[in-house]
Image (cartoon, rainbow, N blue to C red):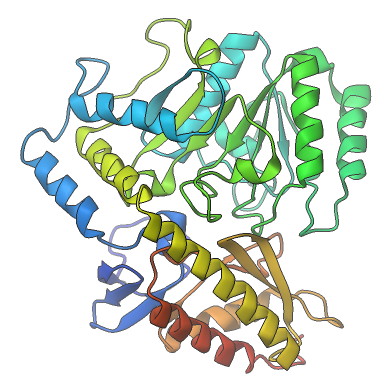
Length: 421
């Protein structure tokens, strides 16, 4: 029997289960079977399912004011949240921003702002990047299938260059050469208004941008009058073990994009930038009916409260240490020839499945996802060849639950046939 009823079949369902409830790092399906959740709603639940402080904030706000469009009249949750958020972001100078419904909408608005402030329409993005599925954002994504296939001509002025990282085979010089070639062959540098980049790629496989290249990019943008936009939609809000991933690169962006974990599971995103960029725009050019909904803002304020708790960062540190030590131990033990190693940084880590003789094989990921789920563990794939497990459990995961999930994963990895191809 079709359990998706009238839902379009355009969705790709990673796990064919129907969830009914969740608590911190665990979820339960419609048969009341429990799973350890290493997916977290694809990076939305950095502080777990149904955190009691967030739930309480949602209930309290829903009893007083469920909705008002901020373009029509201001409301207190929005006005409380924005100063707190701007104070949290480690960027120099005065900051201003706007709230959106989601990360893709944050991307769209950032591109609008860049055009309005610079008078230029060109944008440079990176191979392997992901910035959303809406029509303007989708052209920024660093791969065609499945996001751009069949869409025909997309918004022009978007250019891609390789993403240099210690986690892939792209060097700083290769990226610099590609940038120079772009301006020699494709477009004048004066046409470029913004460069958008994830400090740690999400869908791309949890690859950390080379800090050296990031510093080169910051200097290049300053020299050319180009705005540097950091997409922290997945890497932000503690995912790397620090509030924002760009701090690992030793630079500051001009704008930062937020979403996913910003409101503990409710739909919310944000564009925050230097006030000189965010202000002075045409009146009415930004906004949205649901952007900054009061209930979502209340949840976002509660999420900021949680981020003030030192215990959360100690838990994130423990999680990051455990992942690194455990995977290193697995490699020493020879758990599986497919276990290539870790990508990412801190608490934002991926496990790369790459055989020394066969290289990569997408069917291996399918095997791992299926076998893990049958043993009570939900995982999420990523990477160019769907060959990297992106680990997204809550930073607040209990040590015993984390260990139980890793035990399942070890068991599954050890059963991958060596001759999978």
